Image 1 (cartoon, helix red, strand yellow):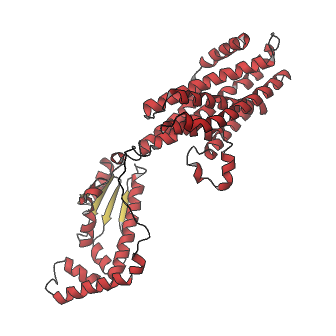
Image 2: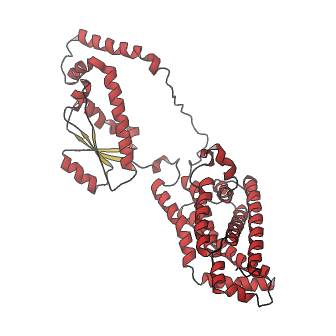
Image 3: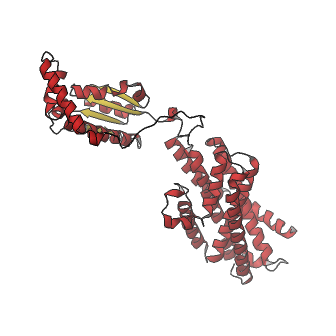
Length: 416
């Protein structure tokens, strides 16, 4: 045991003397987590944190339908999510689009209301801000929905559109009989379509929550997957050092010392596990400090981290016991890490996978690792994570035992 500890410390000092590789592996999950945090923010249930759609409107029509559109932001509920500003010219709109970070410029063409009420084809023009990514797409989707609703409204109004337009222009109000006929005609159309309109296919029921849970925390759901990716990348990168030493003949020279192959391999695997454990601590700390993720009690978190570290290290040991070169190990390790992340539900819920992939997903160690971390981030404890920890322990035991055994055999044959 003393010989293993001495070899481990020597190997660990050598690995930590050049931390560039470790920092590069940690940068991958941290950068991805930061991008998601900046794109989506924190808790999905925090309505105040939802982005506001800022849009400019150039009203060249000044008609009744255009006034109804530009007055939408006057609704208090809409005003919380929509910042609509009128501009007087296209040049002003384009300038403010560039300088004031609006998502899009909506142009209501001249004669828009008249053409719509007369059931003639008309187009809305939307100029999106190329400097933004998400909100211009939101503006486009809203404009498409608006166009659909206006088209349906024009079809419902039918031939009475011209009469409605005259009323909006302030004329025809003295014709009581004509107004009554118009109302009767619109009423008859709605009644004719009642089988299509009522009852609605979708109903909204408003309930009051008994307790404010803060909403769904998207980052707390995504970042545990990033942590497992970081551990896997780190273990693969660090374990590749075995084959580098093999090419340099360092491992073969160690066979001349009074050391068994198992001791040498165990020291190598243990030093990798320590580096992976350091990576885990750094990633967990980054999640707490940068992304405000609460990992719960220290005991379950430590147990989850230890088993995740052992499972990732065992996976890397088994991988490099089967490949012939470091380049093969790095390439295959990267592919398998991404495959395990995809099938394990790192980027989307496991329930979204096809049914035939579900058995494969259960074999992915990343599923059980980030699953346990997600449970802890949601406030779970020992009882909630016990199942995940049991599977992780099994994966860690099998992979580490097989990896050490295969590496030991290769070392004895002089293949390392």
